[in-house]
Image (cartoon, rainbow, N blue to C red; front, side, top):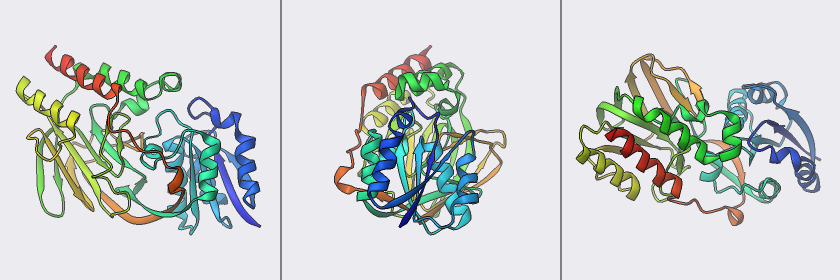
Length: 322
């Protein structure tokens, strides 16, 4: 009989996975898996569970938010396990789950794992620490770990917008230099992301036409500090229309790796979790590093815009003018 290790974060999101956990296990049992269950209690447990107990399984399933998936993936890569990974998104925002087109129906997500096929997805590393979809800095990045969990559970995506709005009056540009394979970029930026996702920092959505999670490259987005209302309007227009390559306020390109020189105390976030900054940073794409089970027939199309994004842009303008 096939064996599956199911790792549950019981505190994730609105705890829907807890409510339907027996049904989730039945899906795997009916698909011929003998399941072993492990429950996380604190940050980092997912990685430790995989490293301590992950040998001998054909499938390891992460049930929780993007942070839970990150920990499970990290444990798989550190242990060099040749194992399939399943993801049941049960967090508040689930950026990575949205990019994969996974449904928020936790039982349906379980079915998509057992009925799906293997997809070799790229992952990133930040000076050796793995991340599944984004390393970001600046405006709106700290919201993912500053927003209270009860607010995330109640408002979901909107919680990140509201928390980010509070930061607008105190936003200061961050000076850094980014070296890619082909060019060097230097300036003062309000926000930056090195990502492999259609949803970034819980706020910004990138088009599926420019994001390929299997091409061995990241999408790099750098937003400059606007010095006047004209530059601000240019930035907002580019974000709203996703015309990212033709805006003087935005730098957007693809790269397999980047070298970054930044202020050592500049904080980052990796997959929504805090990452201490340092002066010299290497971010590397590891092509096809993980095997994730996905069912193409049940994947949900990612939306390109929503009212919350429009609200974020409006608040950004008002906060800047104030």
